[in-house]
Image 1 (cartoon, rainbow, N blue to C red):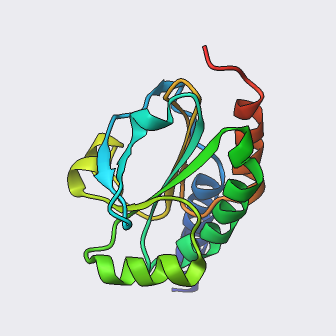
Image 2 (image 1 turned 180 degrees about the vertical axis):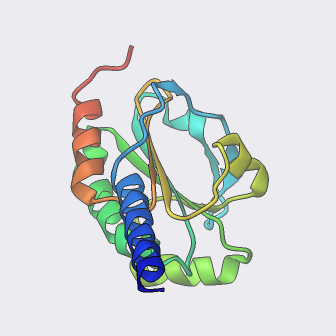
Length: 170
């Protein structure tokens, strides 16, 4: 019995380590074109990914009930402030069911970038959103260069942003 419990505990530790590794390392998808979309943000403005061609885009799928999302959003706010003049645009896509809590969250956190409501169709276009947060880093040419599943250290995303901002649009 003790041996079975020890094996089970080791299995859980290994699983936890694997999940942590998966959530802290970007999955580079090779640059591939980011699926086009047009949404309406919480201010009623149209948000189309194509409008940001020539900019580096951080596309963050999140929800108000997601604790790791709440930890990442202040970093995205800082990055938007710090790098907007160099060509960065953060876009938030909430996967909440209702808009009112998203609007309240946006105001509470003073989010300085467009926030729109997502849909199952958009989630499918981006490979399925099975857990949150999921963040995509998109280069100036509209290609996904990284996909981060789960909470990711701000320094990892910031380093990717800096590298892409240093490259010209081709």
